[in-house]
Length: 615
Image (cartoon, rainbow, N blue to C red; front, side, top):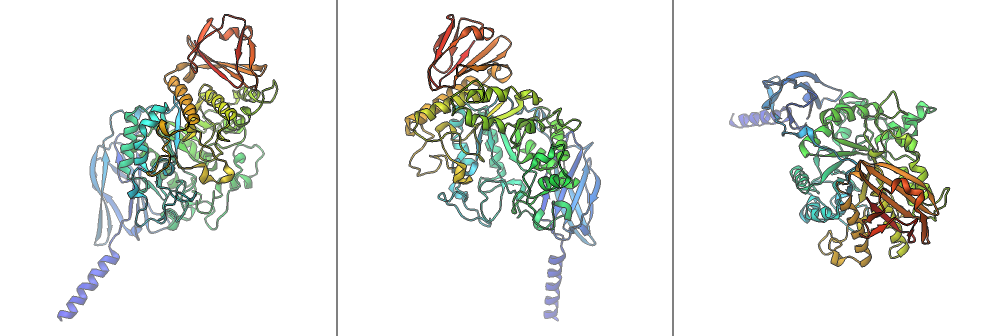
């Protein structure tokens, strides 16, 4: 009998273990009282939990709806927080006599959290790929249990070990350079078997990748950046997730993803989103096709998917203290859902800013995606900021060529900016020479002519309309061509790892040419801070004459005049032509710090040189 009793007890224990309600994930794990949108979606994930009856012990939060989809492993609990106050309560799942108690909390919001100021045209963003910037904590290079257990700096597509501590260690360097915001390439978990260093295959939307650090370490880093007077922009991806996300390996419903039965790759032809002649087939393939096979395409038309993504971004803004979001592959997602997302974020944080990656080849197509665009009316993307990829292409050629009046050199820039009538707000354009997906602007290291090309481009980028972005390493003349592979576009910053032969964070270890480039950029960046003529001013430009391009930025009684010689020869220009933008007979050139006399009838400028004249 004793033996039988023991067996019976073991069977009871095993049965209880098998049939006990098991919760694997609760997302989000907490929320806040006083948010503008009173509806909260709580996703519970675990084995066969959909059989459960659901109740809560909250005093002020109420159950609005309990949604159970095709998979028995999910419950989507919708709560009404209209009258919610900060409180801790339990979510109770009951299956017969089996009960699971899930603690939950509605927190109090930090004072002023809705009043944050997003990035704007007074800012310059510094784009960092965390894995490739600096390794401050080698102990987190390989994390037990994660699928990619390899660090190899000689392999361009493998993790190199950069992390939050590495960025934190070099915030003084970034601040000294003069940028005002840091844009991080994706930092959320990418638990993929290989090639996960770039961060664009999310496997957990509520946790940062442990190889960068913890959620708390990310928040601490954001706070430290804020203490140094800089803002933080976080990369997000709504179009797709990583194929190892439990959403994909254990789908809540068949329609959670587009093309659920088989892998169908996108055509990448997002022209179909604005093309008045587009076929339904072309639009479906572009928007619903998968980016690559390891990144299944989320169906944002599914209301639960949409709510999950929108809510996740708001959670990170509130929890992480973000000042902006860069949304990856914006035109590849559902237009109406993305419009709703931008609107809901703006309602919660009126001055918050989102920039969408609008990688399109012409300004008309890019302008379609900007908030209040007449080209999209009556639809509205509600997306304040778009990426000016066409200008990047213009600059790539313009600073190489000898300027002529029609279509070469600075004439390209003049003609392109003359088409800004297509944009609803040219100040809300992210402008850049390069980024993590393109060839670096600087090339042929060591050539004086290339350094002059670089200087002219930097001067233009930091004084024209829009919000400039600088890709990490541009300040020290890092070079790479896309033909080498995307991993080489994201090379390690020299000195970010113990044992590096050169530490470019220190001026004493940079080459003379690197220091010349760094100091040049630093001077303009720090002068640009708080300069309302640049951040808020109007733009007036003149058609290039004799190879020289001249433009003015003006705000109230302050003005800046930029003179760019797009010729390989010294040029003399007739100042009478520019009389309307020359309020005084002299001005300070902020590059040379010399006083430039303008009381003569002409001005001479050296080959491939720049004046930035401040009145």
